Image 1 (cartoon, helix red, strand yellow):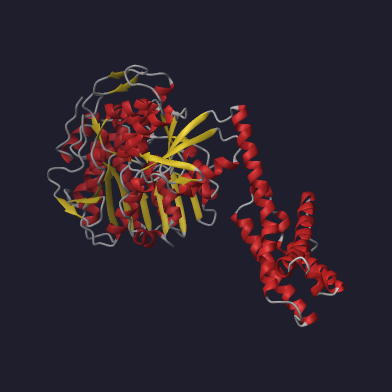
Image 2 (image 1 turned 90 degrees about the vertical axis):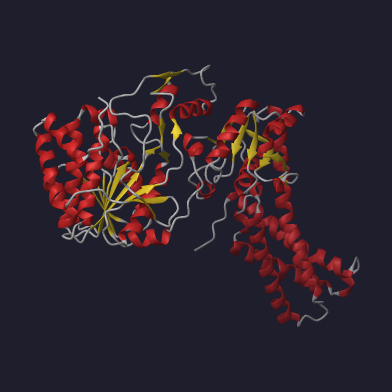
Length: 627
C-alpha cells in the first residue's frame, strides 16, 4: 500500500532529507576540520552523501516523521526523531562496512553524525514552536484576550497539565498569575514559568501581593481533585474575603481520557464542600461479589439505582437486569449503559415492584445471583399525603422482591434503606422500617438459602426530591432560599460514596451466615441545612442575606429536626471496615412478618387509612406521627 503524504508533509519530508545530507558533511567538518576533503576522494564524498540521503529518505518515510505538526512539537516528536536517526546511523554503518570495510572512516564519525542529525532535525521544529508560542503571547497581550487572571490551588500534575494546555490553547481565556501549594515544600519553585507564590493558608497575603504588582486574580481554581471538603470550605470563605470566585478543574483522568477539556473550568459544587477523605475500599472483595455474576437492580433509573448500575457495570457482571416502573428513567440508564459497557449482556424491564406476578416471573426468567433493591418512594411529604402508595411500594414491594428472591434461589438480596427508618416520625420512614424488619426476619429464618443484606444511610446530595436541587432552582430564580428551621440538621453523602459503601457492605455481608444485622454507613457529622443554604449562595458568587434572602418555613408533615442512624435498641457492632457499622437486629419471626405484610397489603389496597396506620404502629412502636 503506497504511503500517502499530506501536501504540507512534502515540505517537511524535503527539509528532513536536506538536513540529513547537511549533517553528513557537518560531521566530517567537525571531525576533520576545514580540510576534510583532503582525507577522501571527491567521488567518495559525493557517494557517501548520496547514500546517507537515500537511507535517510527511506527511514524518514517509514517512520512517518513528516506527519508531525511543528506548531505542537513535543517530547513524543523528539522520541520519534531519536528512533529514526538511530536507525539511519545503524543502516549507514552497515552499508559503509559492506562498501569500504570502514577504511579511512573513523568510528567517532557516526557518533558525531548522530548528534548533529538530532540537532538539525529537532532544532528547527522546537525553534518554530517557540517562535509561534511567543508570537501568540504577544497577540494575546495586544488584543486583551486574557481577561481572567487566575490563581491555581495545588502544584501537582493537574496544575502542570492545565498550564501546559493554556500555552497551546488560543482561546482559553485564562492567565495564571501564580500557584498556591497545600504544603510549603514547593513554594519558590515554578511550573512552566508560573511561580508557586505561597501556600493555601497564606491566600490573603498572596492575593494582596499579586494585586500590588497589577496581577490581582479574579478566580481561584482548585487543581487537586483529592482536596477534602473542609479545606475547600475554608478556601471558599477566603475567596469571598479576597473578592474572588472559586472553581475547579475536572479530574485528571477525565481530561487525559478525553472526557473533559483540560481548560474546562467547572464551578465548585456543594458535594465538594461536604466531601470527606476517601475510606479505603476492598475492591477485590467487591470484584469477587459481582464479576461474572448475574445481577438485577430494581429502581435502576433512580438516583441510587442508576449509580448502582454504573458501578456494578464497572466490575463486569455476566448479565445485568435493569428494572424500573418509569419508562423514561429506564431508557436513560439503559442507553448510558450500552454506551459505557456495550460488552455486558443486559435486559431492561418495565415493571412495578408492587406487581407480585410480574416480579416473580422476572426473577424466575432472569435467574439473578445478586439483587439490589433500590426501588422505593422516598419523598417524605408526598408519602405523608399518599400513605397507601407508600405502604404498597415500600413494604409490599420489598416483600414481593424478597419472596421472589427466595423462590428463584438468589444468593443475596441487598435492600437499600434510610436513616429515616430510625425512630420515624413520617410514614415513609415507618414503611422503610417495616421493610427492614421483613428482610431481617427472612435473613434470620432457616427456610431460605438467600442472604438478605440491609444497608442504611442518610440523604444523598443531588438526588431527586432532595434539598440541593431545590436550592439550585431557588437560586436560579433569584431566591429566596427556603429552610425549614434554623436548627434542622441532616446527614449527607455523595451518591458515588453511598454506592461504593453499599457495594462494600454487600461484599462483607454476602460472605457471612444470616444474622439479620443492618449495615449502617458512617456519614460523618450532620450538616445544618441553614449552613448548606449559605454555602450554596456563596458558591454562586453572592452574599447570603444581602443578595439572596433565606426564609424559614417551619416543619412539614412527617419531618423532624434531626435524623438518627441507630435506634437505642440496636447495639453497635464494629465491622473492621472504615465507614461501615453494624446494627444488631430487632424483628419478629418470618411467619409473623408475612402475616403483617399481608394485612398491610389488604388495608392499603382497600384505602383503609385507620387500619393501615394501626398496623404500622403495631410493627413500629417507636413511630411518632407529627401530624
